[in-house]
Amino acid sequence: MDDNLMKTLISKMTGLKSGAKSFYASQKRIGLRHCQSKTTETAVCLNIHPLVEMKSPGPDAFHESFDSTVVLLMRNPAIVIPAFLNQKRIKYKKLPGQMPLKEWRKKRDESLKPMWNQWKNQYLSWKNTKHYQVRMYFMYEDMMYPDRGIPAITRVSKLLQDAGFPTVPSQEIACLWYQTFGGNALDQYYQYQYDYTEYVPGYTLAQKEFLIQEMAALIEEVQRQGDAELMNILKEYLIYFKEELVVDEPWVNETNVI
Image 1 (tube, rainbow, N blue to C red):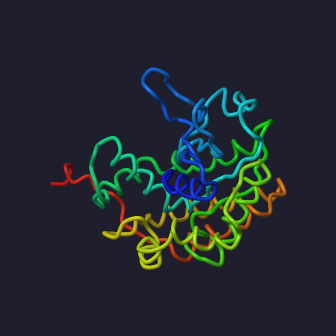
Image 2: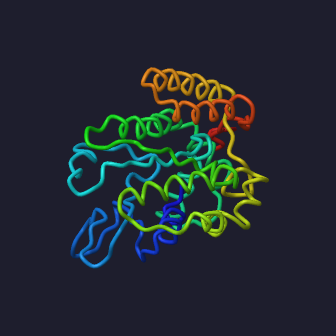
Image 3: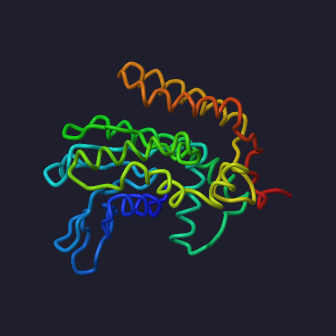
């Protein structure tokens, strides 16, 4: 999920100018700030942008600076993997818009398995920390529907209240949801279920089977852990893999084609 969406949501919800910050934000003379500031109050620290595996010492090393509550942002891996690659392309290569289809196919075929493992491990890593407790899973897909998005935002509001932050009255949550996630973004999601409109990223039949098998195995692991909320989310993604995933052709290295 785009950090800017969460920053907008939390700032409007709490009335704080910098209601949410990125753990990786930095200043030239200070370096990484880890959401700490002497001049502004922050309610939420956004840690681990999509698909970046946590490395030692991990978040437990900073537990004295933060509340123990963790809200994990979730998005369908079949969608968030290409969206993440597209974000990197825009941020680091300054190439706007959706990456060409051939480029997506090449990146997908070269690195799907490690990207899947990164997606999976970021959730398992947070669940296995010593000093934090996952209190909620915040699904991107929920935000696209008022009957699911508004209750989810209400849960976030309650968690912030429990942590001592003021939030907007409950009767304003619906308006807050629409201001943050509504409008053209909803229309595009209902039509494409993706961030861009030129094509919906697909996977080969073999990759589809890989994703189905891996997700089924992850569901079994989460079920053994007794995490019913996460298990139900993963089951939704599994249904998508089976019934809605776009089947695509593999990448062809045209430079080797005679």
